[in-house]
Structures are given as structure tokens and as C-alpha cells.
Image 1 (cartoon, rainbow over the protein chains, first blue to last red):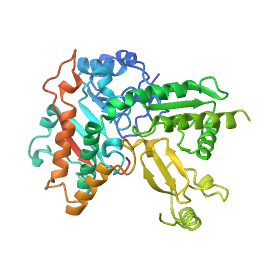
Image 2: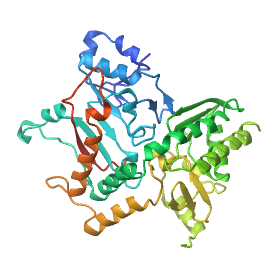
Image 3: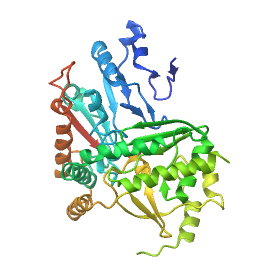
Length: 257
Length: 134
């Protein structure tokens, strides 16, 4: 059930497959848990795998009961990608720590951001001599170019009603993906907002399909056996049709031979 | 449009560059054509040979409003004309302050209408950094 990999991050860490598993951890063990880290709604690099609905909320409630901190990784899911500004909003969850990156600058410059509650901040509020200051940072922390791009990107959300315009495109993506269901070599088609993962029978297929899609005017990159489609939110309906069509025809080309 | 020497670029890439999460033996194989991306507009990317593609994974899940968006470009240019980078250790800058305020504002409980485990005190603070991994 658990994959215990105590040495990977120099502190004990466990991977849990679902929120129910958290309840099965003994009281003495629970008391030692500092935090739960989760990508809300959908796991990205794990292969665009969706959490069962309610998982994030259940984990939030478990953290509230046990005193563990909830760390939500919105690096991939943030900034409209799931249909709302942040994926946590779908389950009305406010984390103790939120991690942002990738889309923060609109994809223009490499900036990341960590948000913490006032409660956590207050624990670091004191003199360095007491070991209170945040002993973490980078030469390029607070980079002005990145921050200016990020603020501008937030402004575009408002100025262009990006989230509103996105909703019909999510449905158009759903319609395009439906045509991939049942194609040879396709194991499962998954979608979370404007993120899609098309799981194929093996990773060589996914690599070859991505390469074949290139010839049809679509660039993407697989995660092992999963072909990824997550275009910019500004993509037009016509381009979206070309994109799902390119994947469709590439699957036929690769998986039928 | 800039003319690119694609052959030379690819040869130099294969000789000098190490790409992340990439099977470099496949990449460097003589029959593998590396795409050299040189321009972008909206959801479209163009390679050094002038061919156009839809950016189907938002350039590794990063791009939101499309490439070359005039508002974001202008904001970067305006900042660049003032200063590109200054230390955040012991100093601050208007761009970072403005962003921190705007982002924290998005995470106020009212934006998330927390129904059950209300935490009105949970105002988030931000700590921004450059993260090479992202």
C-alpha cells in the first residue's frame, strides 16, 4: 500500500494512494506527520492521473483533525489550467502552504512562489540569532522581470475574461477527446479542465504518437505511456480541433501498424 | 524573418548540449531531427525552417495566454528598461511587492469561500523565488 522511500528526501516520506489510507495510519504515527503534499485534482508527472472527486477536501479535513500541514502543489494546475484560477477552488480548500510555478509568469520567465499562512509565518518571525529567519533563498529571488511578467499575466486574466472564455473550450476539448476513446492502442482518455492525458498501451506508442503528431502540426511530449494535450488557454476552437485530430490520426498511424 | 542555419544549430546542439529527461542517444542519432524553435505567437510555435506547430503542451505546461502576448511583453520591456535584477536579500523591489500583493489577494478565504473548516485567519503570505527547475 505504501511506498516507503525514507532516504530520497533525507526524511521519511510515504506515498499514499487515496485519502482513506490516511485514516488507517495509527495515532502514534499520525502524530509524527508534519505535512501532506498533494497536487490537487490531478497528478501531472505521474501521468495525468485524476484523484477521485473529494480527495483534496478529505485530505484537508484529515489535516485539520491531525494537525498536519496541507501543502498544495499548484505548479501545473494553477492559473486556469483546471478551469478555475486554482484547482484547490474546485473543492473549496485553502492549504497551509501553496506552491506556484510554471504558469505564474504566463510561461514567459522562470519564477516560482511559495505562499504560507500567517500562522506559519509567525513561527519564523524573530531574530536570526534564535534561528527564526527563513534560511532559504536564491540569488535570483524576487527577480523583477519575472515578477513584472507574472503581474501582467494576472492582468490578462481580468482584461480578457480568460476563465470565462475557457469554459466552452473545455467542452470542445472533451468532444475532441471523445473521438479518441476506443481507438486501437488507447487504454484510457483522461481530462481535468484544460489538461488531457491519453494513456496508450505502452510508452513506445506514446513517444511515436507524439512524434507522428509533429508531422501534423502539433507539438507535445509524452509522460511514459501517456500523450499529453494541454495547450495555452488562448488556443482557438479551430486549433483545438486540429490538435485533437492530429492525435487521432497519429494514434491510427502508430497503433494500427 | 531571421534566417537560421538549422544544420549548424543542430550539429552544435548535438555536440555541446545536454537536454533534460532526454535519451541523448536517441536525440543525437543522425536520423533524428531536433526541432529548433525560434518564434511563437499565441498558441503557435515556428521552427528554424519556418514550419508552424500548435504548442500542444504549453511549452512544458507553462504557457497560459499564448506566446508574444503584447501586454506581458510590454511589462517585461518596461521592467527591463528600469533594471533586470536586484538582490531580494536585504532589499526589495516594486515588481515583487506588487506581485506578492496580487497573488495573496487571490488566495483570500473569500475567493475560496471555505465552507466547513473556516479559517478566516489563514491569510497567505508569499515568498517568491526563481526556481531553475520550473
